[in-house]
Image (cartoon, rainbow, N blue to C red; front, side):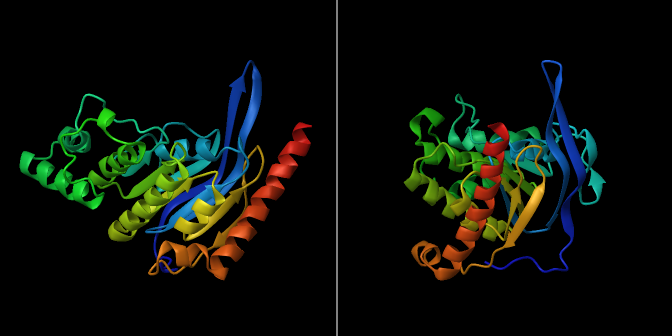
Length: 269
């Protein structure tokens, strides 16, 4: 896996972002002075203690929440709401239970006014890409958890957003299915070259998938450390995760997150 060139354009920029919530009349600082830049085609993961504001930041980038201070930009333009340039995949599958695999993937394409032939060709291409050929007419209730998340990924990729925002996309899956889906996502990313920003609690997952891992502090969350990652994904998964390079960077990220967790616990004591 090669990182984007240093000359690649900045796709996502977060500048001095803060977020405050009002809970029972009391202000709660979720984020404070967050700074982040993600280059086009980069895969960046954010890790940190529970409650540090990782998902809040992702929702703001998706346009679902507004910052209390600072700016969030895509291609240099401020984010003012949700947009088709940003595809979001949540931990929940969020599929329409009354639609088949094909129609779930085709739904957004039809809503965008795409012609019938192009809808069919696009949906079929992504069904093949995620390895679900033969399941086109199945309903979500007939699919395993891993299959449902493949459909959710394909539905998001199909309408060609330039940015993919992932919020714990594999958190509900068992360990074996999670690994399969990680490899599926890695293959889709390498095939399409999209910009990906993922929030996860799983340090091993973040290191395995990403060009760069950013560590957030305890609440109010801000970026405190980052790690560049350059693993050889041309070999089998087993060779990657058993390599000294993977072990070293995984341990370094784990220690960085662990330090923030310990600080958070001491503050809550």
